[in-house]
Image (cartoon, rainbow, N blue to C red; front, top):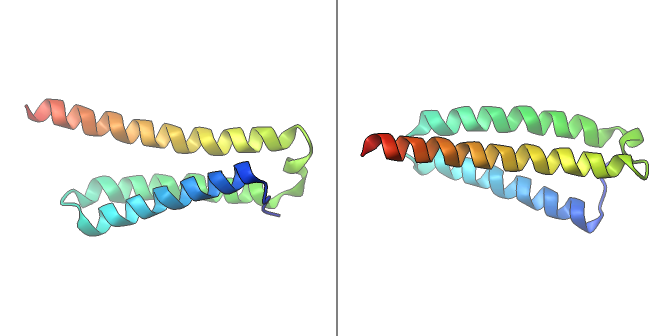
Length: 94
């Protein structure tokens, strides 16, 4: 059961954009190892979120908020950690 509320659709779009970014990085980047690891991490938490989305009990009135929160939290944490790693590599280069 995948919810089709507008906030969940925005979450799905964010996951799709992240997936596209990682695929683009795997195809065009010189540092493919970085994107392979990030793709693996993305795949793991995507699989966790899919199992959460498939359980209809998770979409009772208050539980759907936590499902949305976890989905956004995983995605934003991943983006922030990717940015921090890139920033550290950039600073270490100079």
